[in-house]
Image 1 (cartoon, rainbow, N blue to C red):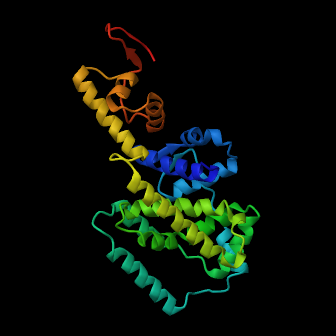
Image 2 (image 1 turned 45 degrees about the vertical axis):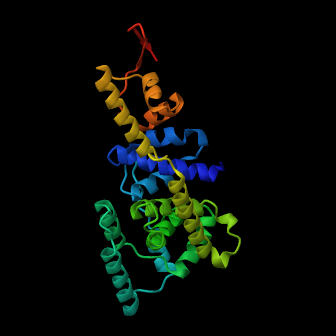
Length: 288
C-alpha cells in the first residue's frame, strides 16, 4: 500500500473513531494513529484543520484565523458582488440540495449543507492563484482551496448515491480525497486542467470506496463496524461468563486475531469493555 493510500485510510479511520467518541479527539489521539508516518507539525496542522472542518473537536488545538482569502480578494479578485443571475443560480442549487436529501441522510449532513451556504466557492481565477501558492507550500492557500471546493465535492458525491454508501460518507470520503489530491499537485502535470484532474482524483477515490464497500464482509471493514461488533461480542461473553472477557476469550469468540483486536481496542478508547487479565482454565488469572 502506498503512503498516500495508507494516509487516506488512516484519516478515514480516525474520522470513524471520532464518531464513536462523540466527535471529540485529543491531539495525542491523532499523533498516536499517525505516529509511524513521521509527519511534520505542519502536516499535523493539516489533519487538525481538516478534522475541525468536519465538526470534530480536537482538544488543545486552536485553528489560527487566516486573512488569506481577504488578501486574495483585495489584490486579485475585483468582483465586489456576484452577478444577480449567478446568485439566483446558486440559491437554486442550494434549495435543490436540501430538497433532494433522502430520508436516511443524517441531521449532521443537513447541518453541513447549511454551513456550506455561508462559504464562497472559488472562482477559476482564484483557483489559479491558490494553486500557485499551494505549490510553494502555502498552508492558508490550501485551506482556502479546500474550503472553496467543498460544494464541488458534494456535487460529485451525489453522482454516486444509492450505490451502497450513504451520501454523508461519500462526502466525507470525497473531502479526504480533495485534501489528499493537494498533497500530490506535482503529479498533475497540465496546469491548465489541474482543477479537472483534482475532480477526477476525487471521483476515483469515491469509486474505490464504493468498490471496497461492496466487497467487504457482512460486518464490514470499517473501524466503527468492528468496534460495534467487538462491543456486542464482549457484552455477550460477559453475560455468559459472569465477568468481563479477556482478549484471548474475545479472540476465540469472534474468530479475529488478537493483534487486530488490540489495534481496534487502542483506537476505540473505552468503547469496548474487556478484562486486562488472562483467565486460565484453572480459574486463576494473570496479567495480559
